[in-house]
Image (cartoon, rainbow, N blue to C red; front, side, top):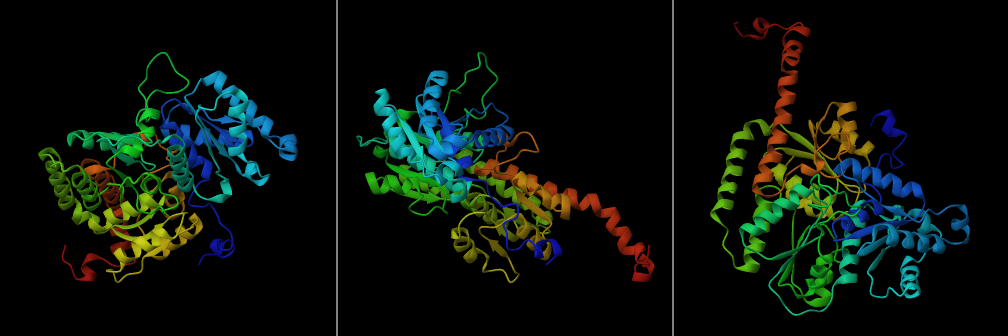
Length: 465
């Protein structure tokens, strides 16, 4: 253990996650006409707005109740109600999401009670205001995301007549990934409700006039009818039953829930399509089978390069699980799999890694100091995750393949396609090309050091030249 880690091992240094309200904002951006406000200080909403805008390269409005010293001591109810007034006046939204910051939670603000009182006072009993308790110290952005999705469904879903639509619960993936899932559903001629859907709202075309709230997003009427769907497919396997929006629909309304991984890689995409065909009794179209064949061909082509890969994978647990499985099936040996979240990832990955004789570190509640030390110890030569892992490149020379959220030191994070057979091939190409870049970027230097810097020559090693 190096000196830097020795003196920081009892603290969380540069955690491998962000705060709950950061994740809680994103689902509201995927709901039709929704606006979100954070009950807390202005700095929280400013920081999150900037972080999200940098990733998606889109204007991202997030309101704030602007708690100050007076509100912190005497309570911030008046601030929040004034903030709701301003949101209604300026944005004219169809739904308002109210999230809390560390400050509001620490002083014990009951946002659910405050928003209920507000609606009664203003005669807005039927107007949807979704209050979500998201203390920054209470969990990760992944937990905030899941909780916000579940609370949106709890607020809007109503008992309804059965219909033919399929619910798809979307995790925190890119707008390009969501569009690919829509394309696959269209190829199978399946009617569906995606919740949430940021495919347009956080990656919209350049159009005039500019609107403060983007069009797009899951329609409120469609969410209301989710209890009448034939089934729910939740793209995620690491959520507990308490966190799972699909499990809520199953418990409250009897909608069968199928949990499958994010469809990255052959195995995970197969599981997604198997769930779709089992529920709808539709056949997989030839065009998708051809895409699967191309992905297999891509795997054959790149395997001779990928077997040199020793990967460190980090980020939100759903993404880490799918990427780890994809690395395994492509011969890119995972040496570290890390998340800032729960232990559920360890339970899922440990049986998959059992077949290998070498040590593989599965880290939960991890920080980047630990990830960095383990990556060096176990000989990682490629990192896969968000921009927050750039220090692995800067300090240890481990090249980073960017995927997930946030990507704020490159453009195009919203256009990264990684799901489905086609997206998986594109992701695999990014990984393989990074490994090839490492190989050819250092080939001449490593040969020089091997044969000449140490005093050896090809002749002395036994080779004729």
